[in-house]
Image: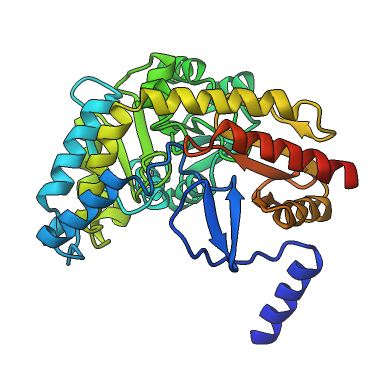
Length: 387
């Protein structure tokens, strides 16, 4: 087996697909330190700049002194502490995907999506997932053993045809709200209408919308949607700046996850100190209109400056601004050339994105300034001219 693994890794390296972990010697922020160098970074999902916000850090430290460093057990044994309970209550009220919604917290978004689909769907059911949905939604669908159909990206007509042909006991429409590598937004209003027409559930992964869209309440609020058919997942390690995830839905859906979702039942709870830090972050999200307005100005400025680049800028009104270079080697060289200029933008390659669409994924944060965006645009122009 070792020889086979070595050969497979060699092929990955030869194809330019070998990934490396960069050791960061600083807290997250607009500038980070890697290999002894300070780099202006456009790589983090810390969209509101809360990962190192003083009040969030203080809440974490204070709670650790009160509640300790670890939860010690799963939520169903003795790991569900008061800060977890308070966070769940506040998240349910803030996002409110339906009247009387409850919320449940998870240690990661990956676990949350595995839990939703494996607990609610089974062999006699059908899952219809957008082809560009996150890998954890695909894995959750496979784990559920339901019939999985992947419809073309944001293709409402194709989804409608698939739903009409289905005779499954239960049907689930599954989508990202904001797509993590393209930055575009799912047609949530049309998807909910299809769910209502075909007696289906709508599972929404709002990892990249929560905290940013809809005055911070997420993509459902942005679209003005609420329904008992919606199962909403939001992550807490991106715009919220800390770690973990939550699911908000009808109280019976959430109770089913508490009772039957194996990724929840058999996982040690995240430390209560993280829940306390997240409650502090949630308060900043609620009152974060100024940060979101600044972020929107940065997005507009970047798009105005990047329009003249020879690379294709995907349409996106979100902090995710992808530049398509196509060729893997070109994307990697462009990323390295930016690092040489003191700027870090990651090259995203297959299988994370489809073959032929390797890209630079620019990720903007409220921690950036307009001067930072100008510096990025200047560096991109230089790199493109020398490509």
